[in-house]
Image 1 (cartoon, rainbow, N blue to C red):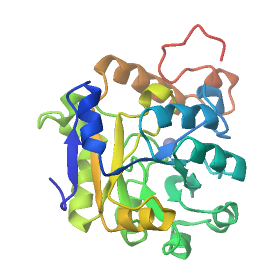
Image 2: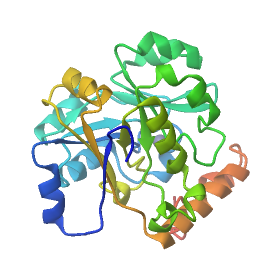
Image 3: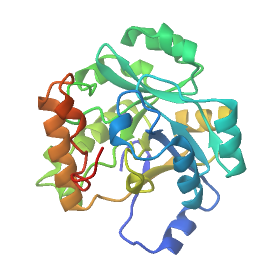
Image 4: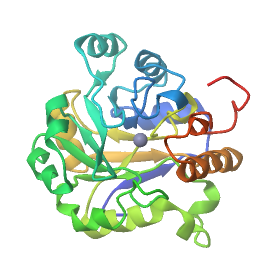
Length: 274
Ligand SMILES: [Zn+2]
């Protein structure tokens, strides 16, 4: 479909189908938020440990917790993940000059050193740098900056946030992934499937299978060399609509207003105390 990137779009809920597809590969998600996120904590009901426990049950073997502009990583959480069969790689969704960038395999000090998109060059060899949801709605999406700084990015995210209707030719212009696919093809960049989960039901919808040994450096190298498969399942349209409504309201309500924190991301739990 793209530069040799293999995309499997799931139609079946049959778990045997998923197991067959993942055999012989590491199952990874490089973009997940947890309760420890300094920006989104009020909207996230699960902790890093909750995430690891659920991800292990769903067969994940590699995870990066990518909270906003912070590296949530310690020996104890790494050991907890290992006991559950998961290799945890430290990561963050950095906010650089107002734009989001996924940095995988970084340290807290690395994050402090990155002030501009040009600074990404300093991390290019050690980290895996991914453009998250680059063409979706929102001031924090990279949009034109991705192509301007394309040499600093190792991979482009294929976001879970779309419906089956949005992959048809007629509506594809409304799908942020359409331009991501085009750019990946143009610059021969791997497409990495992620959940960008803020709710646990988002996990396991879009993810990446990696043909690699279960070692951090090998995994990063395998992604850079595009030895991956993208597995993705479109969202339920009703849920998509609720989430869109939540996102739009958050975009228009100033961050300082208390009301903003009370807007649930999916409107499912609107009557719950947040
Ligand atoms: Zn995110």
